[in-house]
Amino acid sequence: AVALDPDVIIIADMGIAGGDEARRWRMHMSLAAVRSNAIHIIEPYGICSTTVAAFPSAVKSIAKLIHGGAK
Image (cartoon, rainbow, N blue to C red):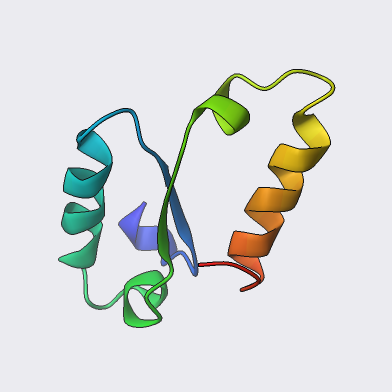
């Protein structure tokens, strides 16, 4: 949460709520993730309900977001 000052914020979007959630996070200008524009909205299917076969790809996608490989 806010007290932890995250470097990256990843939101699994389930409709229009993802944009609303990102806007709420962006109000906290003191957060490192906000200052560096590291708030990412992702499609939840591959991440939230992944299968054993799809898991490596899901982890790779998140790693790219965390380490700056994709925005």
